[in-house]
Length: 302
Image 1 (cartoon, one colour):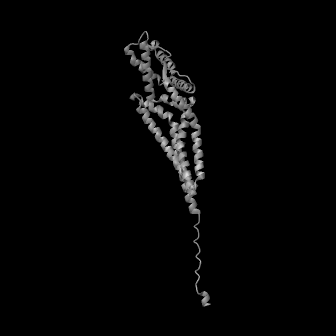
Image 2 (cartoon, rainbow, N blue to C red):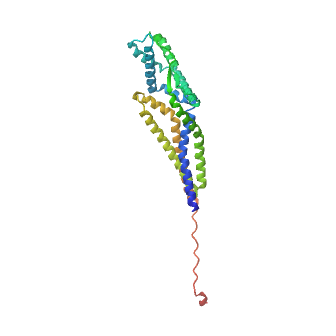
Image 3 (cartoon, rainbow, N blue to C red):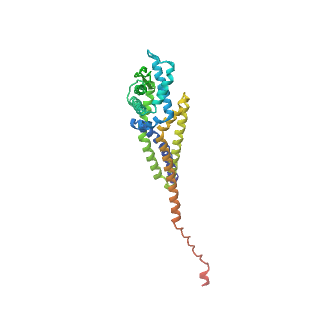
């Protein structure tokens, strides 16, 4: 009876450990990988050369320039509009765009993180004026006749509305706590489950297979999140750019899922091979000796 209780308790502890492990990896990624400004900018930097991202930026910034010019005192001629988009698209292939891209991502990330860590209730915005300045300088260098008429205003682009900050702050604080306790709890529960098990080899194998299964579930969650994120976009033209951004941000998470899967399967295979090798090296036990039967009547015959 005690052996069954130990086996059941060990199974529960190991199952909880394998369930908390992918959740802990997700919490660590969200609390540390996404919230570090320098790491975020480094992750997003290669996207400045992605064609889908360039096209999305060119369309968005070009429309913004034309919209600001239309609201000004001297609106641009309609025939100039295609040249504006071409100039913006040409600007996305320059080194100045990479600099502006990094600066814009850094400013946006710092604004979001400052809002999450503070208690202010204002909208989170970012100023894209440096990008417009770079475009205007390039157009002036190319001697475009309308370059001096492009307005450079410090228009604040909204990133997060104020009514969403309360929920995001709560989620951020929960992730900050979970990023420490979930991985630690997973390790402690796994160690306790293996130590309590009646057969530790089986418990170790179950823990390894559960870790691999958790890694597979984590990778599946990343794929499902990608599908849902792209499906919710109202503009289908920006889906390639959004996919590139999503893949860049979740690269560490995908690596973690493959790492859990590989480590779990490797540990399970090593445990199985070790047990198989031990059985081969262990000599078979000798058969028990049979006691000779006593013949009744020996005393009589003697």
